[in-house]
Image 1 (cartoon, one colour):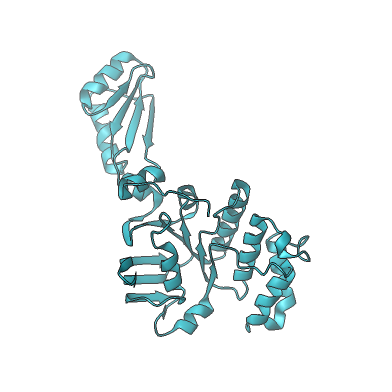
Image 2 (cartoon, rainbow, N blue to C red):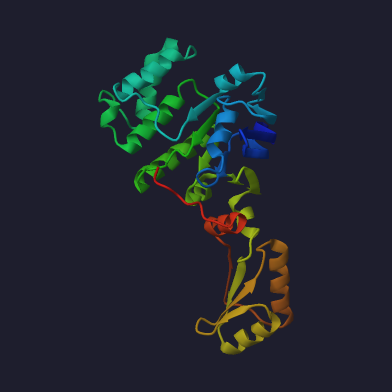
Amino acid sequence: MTDSAIAVSGLRKAFKDKIVLNGIDLEVREGTVFSLLGPNGAGKTTMVNVLTTLMKADGGTVRVAGHDIANEAKAVRAAIGVTGQFAAVDELLSGQENLQLMVDLNRATSGDGKRVVAELLERFDLVEAAQKPASTYSGGMRRKLDLAMTLVGNPRIIFLDEPTTGLDPRSRRTMWSMIRDLVADGVTIFLTTQYLEEADQLADRIAVLDKGRLVAQGTADDLKRQIPGTHVRLRFTTAAQLDAAARIFTDSTRDDEALALRVPSDGGTQSLRALLDRLDEHSLSAEEFSVHTPDLDDVFLALTGHTTEVDAK
């Protein structure tokens, strides 16, 4: 069992009379992707700012990389990397110069700076553009450079605050691939996003933040099973079998054209076993059997009462 990379208990933060984080509890395991999902204004960036020591909490305890953020801020900063919502590159400098600047600011890598810069340019496919001003880079290239700059110093925990906002689909998938590679190397990722697909694709665990509170936590599949709509679809070979099954499962919905029956279920193994046992008791068998769960759009709407309201910001 791995240790906690991030442990948060009772975290609170307010700006005057507006409560932004209201008693947050969460844990992020080492070498995983933890996604904080929520709409604009939910408190995601405030959470990142507190966890990365950029902002002081009003209450609660937080440990990052084993260090208390209130009393050991310097140790926390040495263990983490942060990529904000907007690429923090200097547009007047080239890609190589941006990376060299980060190396010069990082004492741990300054002695081997040229090798570090060369490796990062190669890793992020920026060699050809290395000498060009960052102002000429596309949005996707800027985000790659920004992430490369974050990796100077080899942080074991990286905070990515909406890293793909504004990127085209191809650039987003490139960023996803890079995140997966980092996790494969043992890096822990704390990812905030308002893109449901992104959380579904990347996260080992997801927390849904709405109006300063965590309204749900778990794997994507855990969250999908929490809301109505999960069902088992049974397809039969004859109308007689469909009729018989419909009489057994009185809360089901039938599709006569497809000879299929939709039976409400939580999708768990115990309920699935009971369903199959009931079919067997009546000497019925389905030609096809599949479990269908709601997607994260359904989950978010059910938990918060509204959509993520994605804005191009």
